[in-house]
Image (tube, rainbow, N blue to C red; front, side, top):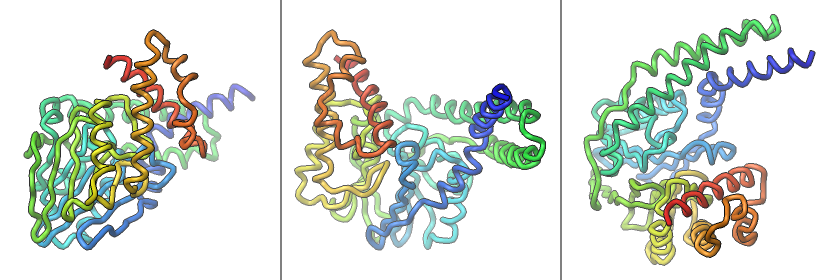
Length: 340
C-alpha cells in the first residue's frame, strides 16, 4: 500500500511539472489583478502566493503606442494576456521591455513576439550580448516540459483507473500546448540600452535607464515626470541577490529613497511600494555584504546562523516569506563571498 502511494505521489509530481502551465498558469492568470496607476499605466500584479515565483507586468499606453514591461514565466498565461491585450489596447503594441534576463521576465517574450511580431523587444546591452544563451534557455525549458510529459504518460498506469481519463485529458492538453510553444521563437532584440533612452508613446514620454544591480543587465522605466518608477526586481521588498552587483544595487536604492520626486514604485514581484519600504531591501542587501566582510573565513552555514535577526525578522511573518527569505539569503551570501 505504501509503495502504491509512493508511485502515485511521484506521478503527481511529474504531472504537476508538465501540467503547471495548465492548471497553475491558468489560475495564476485569472488571479492577476489590473491596477490603474494613472490613465496611461496599468500594473498587472501577480497573485500573492506566486509573488516570489512569477513576475508582475506593467502596461503603458500613450496616444499612439503601447509598451509592455516583462512577461510571466507561464506561457499559457502569456498567451491569455496577449489575447486580452487585443481587446484592451486602443493603440498598437510597439514595444516589449524585459527588465532583465531571468526566465520569469524574458522567456515569455517569445509568446508575445508571436502575437505581436511588429513589437520591438528592448533589453539591456549586456542581455543582448548574451542573447543566444536565453534563446537556448527557452528551448531547454520546453525540452524539460516534453520529457516530463513523456514520463507522466509512462507512469499513468500507476494512477487509479477512475482517475486515468482525467489525467490523460490534462496531459493531452499539455502536449497540444507544448507543440504550439515549440513553434514560437525568442527573437533577437531590436533595441538595446546602454544609456538612458526617452521614448514618446504619443503624448506620454518615458525614460528607460540601464543599471547593474539585481543582475549585470537591468532596465528600469521612469514616467510621469520621474514620479513613477517601474523598477523590476531592483525594487523588490524581498530582493533576490544571487546574481546581483550588490554594492551598486545598494547605491541605487539609496538614490531612490532620497529622490524627492519619486512617489510610486512598481516592483517586479509583490505590490506597489513607497520609498520608506525600500529601506527594508536596502537593509537586507547591506547586511549581507557587511556580514560577509566582517566574518571572513566563515562557511555559508555559519553565516546563515549568525545573520542579524533584526534584518531578517520582517521577512518571518508568514511561511512563504520565511522559505523565500532563507533561500534568498543563502544566495546573497554566496554572491557576496564570490564577489570579494
